[in-house]
Amino acid sequence: MKKRDKKWLTLIAILLIVIGLSITITQQHNRPCDYPEIAARGVLHVSVIHSPLSYNTNSDSIHGYDYELLQLLGSQSGLEIEITPEPHFSHCLQQLNKRTCDIVAHPIAITSQSQAEYIHSLPTSLNKQVLIQRTDSTGSVAIRNQLDLRGCTLHIIQDSPTRLRIENLAHEIGDNIYICEKHNYNVERLVEEVAKGSIDYAVCDEASARIVATKYCNIDYKTDISFTQFMAWTMRNESTELCDSINSWLMAIEKTEQFRELYTRYFGTKNYDKLQRINPQLYTPQRDSIMTSTEEVKL
Figure (cartoon, rainbow, N blue to C red):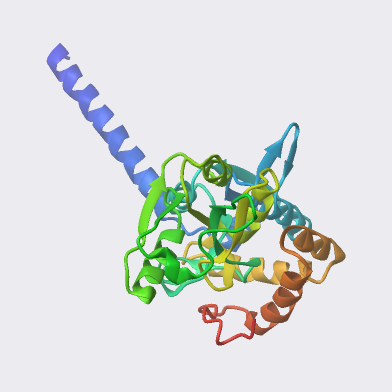
């Protein structure tokens, strides 16, 4: 056989291998991945955000509401929980879309927009967005009414869903509220920048603000930016059986003393009582959607 023919055969073989790999990758990307497949492998792949509320490391220990709730979920389901922390929520969604994780266990507000792209678990918590600002020497603050946010610049974490709420608030008050996304920031750094005076105002969720604010004597988070919102975990639209399973496990977990202790530690007793009243009203197996309006369920 001539050398030229050998080269052509080698090139054709390489091309066929590349095509085969491409088809395999495409098939893997498009393969169904719902509860039966997850149960068969015995592992639930979870993506979380490295944050004070969800997943936080301190020396050799790991803590955080979502991390600890996932441990209870593992015990309830019998699945091994494999957790991958990410710096930003957008990274978690990328992992979900690429199918390298099955669920994003970082709570986001359940909205009609989010439900158009993904399905959500029952609310894992009730939370709201709050304004982070400095207090003066007398303990007073500059803003206590949302109308006073006209013309202000609010700093948020990169890719935060908070942007949509601020844009809606600007529309509600009929004036501009400027938004500055801080790249490579987390909640701790955002609050620290306010405390130091580098920025005047930031927005984050109340539960995270409560945790981080304990480090500073001049931080206030008592001005609400949103109403109380249903916060939930996120899954792909195809994962309906997984969503049903997650919801049934969560309902069983919420009846336990371990959950009561966990939830009240992060959100308080009143918030716990609200969640206990709300979730039974929302839970219906294989529900197409979760009610999003606070008018539908009395908070």
